[in-house]
Length: 318
Image 1 (spheres, helix red, strand yellow):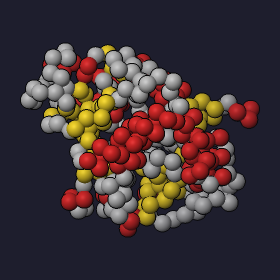
Image 2 (spheres, one colour; image 1 turned 135 degrees about the vertical axis):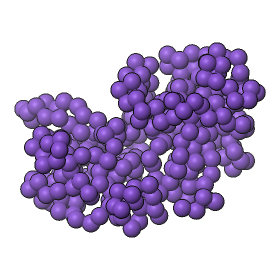
Image 3 (tube, rainbow, N blue to C red; image 1 turned 30 degrees about the vertical axis):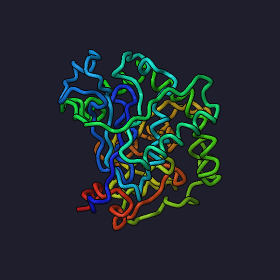
Image 4 (cartoon, rainbow, N blue to C red; image 1 turned 180 degrees about the vertical axis):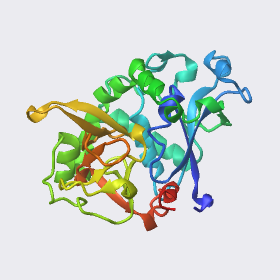
């Protein structure tokens, strides 16, 4: 990968535990680091920042390839993680260190951030003023190692925190509907019906049911990696079937009692897309079969992983 093409984006959105996973693993995203910025104290500790004596905000710094994932898309995704009308913190985390801000690294980023904020104000999404600050980037200090990739290291605690803090409920109530409106324009009718209306495509008449090329399958909405061809098999059901997801935290399960049955629905964590269902008749060690709608997926061939921003997944095929 050409490191010269990488740029930085820095966002403060309250607790940095919750600001990594939405950006991590997306195409063109090289790394997401939790840390502290905006204040004056060098190399502050977590305790110092939380005590609101350093002027720093909890933030994430993202290394990204703008040709693959433009800064405008990062801004759009950032807004959808926060309550931009709250000037006292975020959700149940209160105080200066939990305020929201966009830290720009160039004049171009500043203009794009200001335009994005103005568009949000004019959209009428919120009746209250948008108070998220747009500030020039200052030195960024990585947080302690135990904070890095917290959503991977402590998955259960992370999920409990998101729910308990009220962040997930706020996002569901204030942002998901807006996403739905925009997706009408970006998805074709069958993709929209499957992912947004919990539809099911016909067996044996869908794109990937008998697809055998090597590569990964990503969420058609968010681009998050979901499944690998290494774990795909012919279950004889007429839909793409997998023994496991690439990363379990990106695939969530919910009880489904529709059609007079009790089943386990599978949804993507980031985009909340309906994917399909999971059954316990699979051939793998876990005995699971992830039965997924082709229309919920986009396929990235093995030889195009690096070009499409998924270089880290080439190791799956070595």
